[in-house]
Length: 295
Image (cartoon, rainbow, N blue to C red; front, side, top):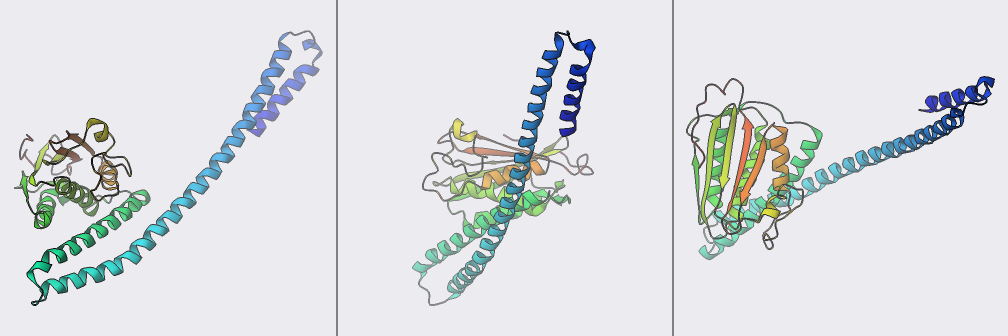
């Protein structure tokens, strides 16, 4: 930029010194334009310096944030593991009153929530550091496992999985995608305080797989639904329910990293339906038939 400014000044000076341009009415206008151009170039240089400094500061802040998250997660894991281990020992204690078992279960559930929160924070950092590792795995089997795990602690809820009667191979990071579906399942349970059915529908068509998770919970209004995937956002009717507003944001980041999309349809008092679409593994797309049509 500096060389351009110097060249403009030299051109203007040479034109001004040329006797042939003594009476040229355009000379003064050209000189004004050259001066304005020089000022713009100087402003651009200042903006570029500010931008470089901001990028450097942003990178440093991100590095410090990653270090803080790693430190906190490490410090929390040890005491949480001790609490969970002690809770498991209490469950095996024959002299423990039966009335105490639900309280022990609550302790273990609280520990698991804390561990899940830590995992989500670490997942957020992992997404910022690297893309997903593409490796084909069976999505149907993963959903079956997650459904069984959540059903154990989802008292009062009926969880049904449809369309998972055959393998559905997709490329991606299994661990990251398990965060997506476990979060959606846990939310379906959490925001359905009166129980009811939680239905998962798995289907494939035209080279992609679709998973819909629908509940009969409290639902959200249209304005909140439009922001559910924003970082740290919580719906207006979620007061009193534990959460940090990170789960759905991370779910969207993970799904988009895998070349897919996630959406929600919801209505207050009538539940929510989250739909995740992901690409099938190229070799598996022609061989896997449509398993079930979403209702």
